[in-house]
Image (cartoon, rainbow, N blue to C red; front, side):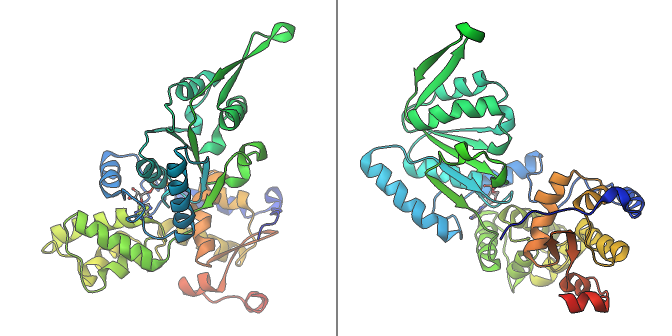
Length: 368
Ligand code: ADP
């Protein structure tokens, strides 16, 4: 279900003042443990690489994608042709990059990885495309951030395996067509709605990665505990899984932090008690919410009687771009039913009130 969200006029809203003082209180949030985005440090990088599933069997969950994908891979291999262009969309940390690498492995081809913002000029993309061999995969992460002129070059590359380059300017300009090897483009995006339809229509498959079931996150945690050579027992896997925000990247990060805690404070074995006290120390509650999530909910409940609150106000309250609030904070709070998006803004739900131990105003609870 989707609809336009009309925001309340934040300019007229006296609580914006509250928002900026609230922002000051939430300023120290740089190393957010439960962010679904990659944390750019070498430790996270090496953990991600070492725990990354290598084939579709190891890739847990997302069966609605794996099954059609397997068929396409087999069919393409039989025809000895590259697989059709694939668009993967979904929240950060759900496995888009992992899937692209697996597809390349299963097809037995090379993969070249880049990202939308890195392709600033037509020549950046032209250089990459002209270096691909037959069947190779080009993975473009954050493809919605590619600039318009570069995007237009992709159209003929995807459709006709040719580069149409315009040489010169004005009336003397002419188009030069350069043939390319047949390749597969895998695009990844967190924001399908920001993709233009000509680009979207050129993908043969469009797959949506869902948030994971807790049972799938448990499987990932158990597999990765083995790879990290750490023993995990009596429901500690469940304890970590429910706090992982249905996201494998966060599950891996929490597992690693709990392992460190078990090694320092205990005998290295992760049991339920150790997992609980580690996560408590790390300030991740039983829904996987951290300080900032709870502050967002408190802000809506305490300053706006539960909402609705405009995205603008909410963003200034936590000193973040609206885009970050929409892609990073909101999706999970919506997913677990703590937040609701209404045409007039965001509202805290009865579940949020209960979680924070607050009483919902009568009028509100009757409306829910
Ligand atoms: P995205 O590209 O969507 O941001 P990644 O593919 O980089 O996410 O995944 C982040 C990490 O989560 C990977 O390093 C991988 O170890 C793990 N992961 C993602 N999806 C799965 C899965 N289905 N099964 C097991 N591990 C996964």
